Image 1: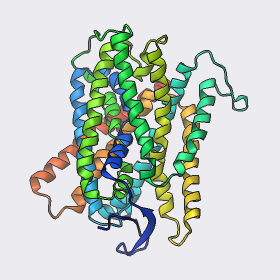
Image 2: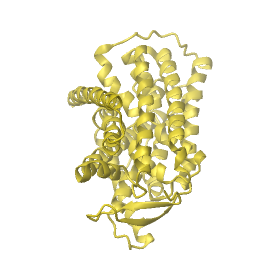
Image 3: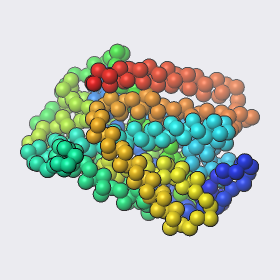
Image 4: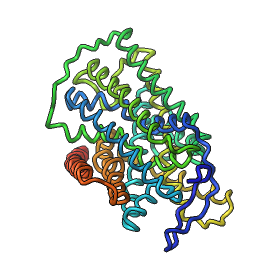
Length: 417
């Protein structure tokens, strides 16, 4: 495979015909690792403590197991991408495996995950702005928005230029900011424990089976990054190192999340809120640092989660269209997508329910079921029977978790209304 050019899968009836795109693969292994970790680190670090408290300490086994599974399915997507240098997007892999049906189904779930994830990020940003700016007044009176909602609108407007960026190597600094802020939250939480007077002496139940399906949705959400993996893979100068980078990034983030889950649950116990930073004492300087970090993190994520949608729009443009026109259309699509997300986030402000529903309804398909299905179909001639059976069992278990979790979270959302 030519590692310096990203190819665009042809829309023609002959799937063997490809059209070269103008993007150049320039990401080193280091920048790819940063991008992968930047994709993974997000709202999960805020919600895992809440999930662990509600699921019991034994549910941490599910958390770690899902991260291991996410790393493996990321590896499977890398194997699929390596079979054809024209494969460029998540839906392209679906097309290779199952034809047009595979493309449309994978495209629906991938876009839904982007959509619902961005809504969750924006709700989280509004929640933290409400906390950090208590007592301050700022309104966009024409839309009758609160202070936090008004500032969220401004934050989205500030973030819009980032969705116009095309080259993932050029935005690796955004991943670096995201990772540093996430480490800051981890350090601040530990400082609150050691110096802020909040002792980690709260009891955690062993296992709360009645909550396991809603909790599983929160855990599954943590590994939801697979729809953007083709963009990361195709940006690599040397994609042969992709699998190693996947395991390293998933392992590092799993370690961070498990630590935060136990520390937050032990510190705040049953009183913990859906985002651990909102449970921290108001008067501490540490709290203000964590709250601002939690405000900025969603702004660093928009570019990654709008990229698959913008790439899909660009894929349908004529190959001979000038680069500047393609850039404008791609950027406009990402910007419009972000504006719709903003409107829905302000309308449906139920963070933990939306997050868990995203995990159960779409992330389980995008990050586990679809990658395994693609792999089984594309490599069907070489997969041993025992391996086939194991993969099918994993799909069945994940389907059960997804269906019951979706029903549980939908019922919870109905109760909110």
